[in-house]
Image (tube, rainbow, N blue to C red; front, side, top):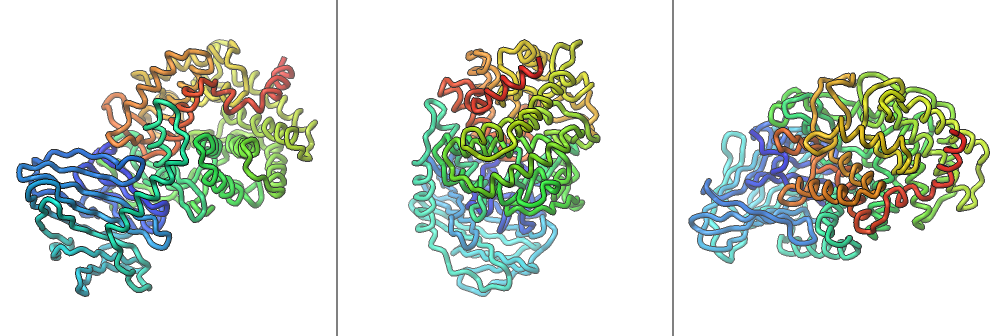
Length: 610
């Protein structure tokens, strides 16, 4: 039985990532990229699929852990009857290869420790050939992949695993360094663990000093920003949605997806969060990744790409893995990359407009690309799509998709006006007004008195909370207020927001999932937009209370079991946390924060709607 999702902590080097459980077991490791198949996979199966545990022989040891302040260096302390040790886990930011460094530091007494390494490649399927050339080195090779382990601990082979036992006394440090190298290359030079620890701590503390954290929320915000930095692939600037695949939205269920890709939907939230926190280099890199990824024919635009902009993200299943706590199938790749989702046009145009407003250097080719995308959107905005939640029940006319089509034209109009860019403004204004009128006529249900998930539907959707936040309608519009109240009545479960009713909506999948945490942060923002500050603060504090002991959140939360579910840690959740925190601290209504540049467009479109 694998650990619970909330029992894991993240370490990474901005090229690869690993998850370490509370018991000292490293159960998920992707080399040399987030989406590589050269990884441990015990998180999705059992110990035989790969893991690496270092822990006291005393099973009754009391465990506490933390990140070193302002870093991604994890410290797990084991208190035993015979003494105490601290296990320090980190990945140095070397830029040439990825290593996991594990330091066992004696704090008190004399503690007997054990290590068990089950090294597997190919998502737990491939047992490597292991040799021991001497000098404390272990070398494991399988096809293109090689891992090299260096440690002074005497290790032996046992049933296709590597085990060892050692004793640590107070003041002593026992190092383990596991490094990935392509198998055709020579083994790397030995790494100096103390120097690597000092350099890694120096990097993270220097990076976090650039942050402008808000008020009393500084600790949660800073931890979220460090997590987002760790999910950034530094060679390209792409930010993955999560470092994991197939962690279930419902334990034992089939809603298990691969999130190790970059979604265009995250574009605006990412830029706003990074720029508001003072990280303009990262924001510039993300903006540049975005322009490179979407470059090409607008007809071939995708909703997500690989970390370098890859387009072929073919989905397939791994039947040898039983899935996290029996949640199958385990999937690699994501078939949703081929879906039509109109909202991404709005997200891209909004992100590029926000970048201009915040002073990121613009490019002439970027504006030309935007114009081409808008020309394509003009032809397709009336078509049904699969929507923001990437449903697999067939295309529909999703209300939020149409709202974001309006955002695409609205933000582009504002960019042209504010920055003197050539554009067919009359045509874009006409299209924005037509889309606005269409949404208000067909997306609003007079009988229910609220906007609905899709045209002709009687179902609600949490994405409707974003309508005032993107500036489509003012927060005090009676239709907006009524929609928020309807969502409170029908989508709030134990105080948290569900994306939609999976039991009532035909999305092509069996019902059942947790509360999507970003949606609850959207409710915080919606409360602020309507001056319901106490409700916003109350909800925000409840959401902070869901973080695990090291400040991380997954995609969803199951109120029935009190468990984090979905891929972990989830960038979209942490982005939503950062933006809600800034909105609360600035006492600035979120619709002014994101949608203020579009207010003239709102007025014009609303007038056209009549």
